[in-house]
Image (cartoon, rainbow, N blue to C red; front, side, top):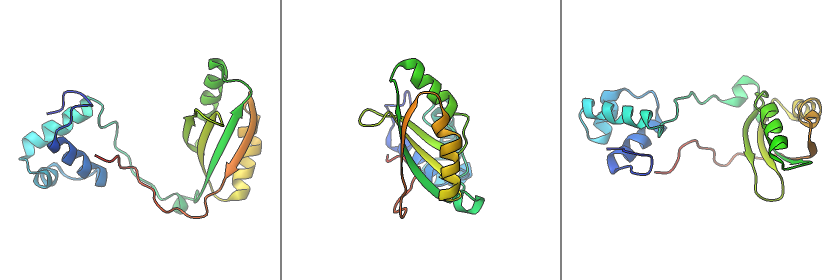
Length: 157
């Protein structure tokens, strides 16, 4: 049984693998797949939820089918790495739904973003009208992937 996020047993890992494949799986089917009866299986899932191992359940949307089919990886350099500058940038980015991932980096750039847009023109407008206007942004460089080879949300267990 899970006591903290670092002490997962084999059954917990099987439960998590199945839920990562299908978060809407019924408890009876999940229990069957992991080799438990329904009641202990549900208890394990609830413990995984309560301890935060399972952070939330989401629907994975096909970005192209909702008009956001192009991905852009955007590297940002700030004019300062001071906590106030980073906090301001993060607060502004959190208001922008086009930015679907944002990382504070240790390396060449200060921030790395994954941005989705309809196409290059839409991204360029977003960059000019929003990203470049955030106070403290010194430089913006964008990489455009030619093809998605692998994309998963599952954590290896």
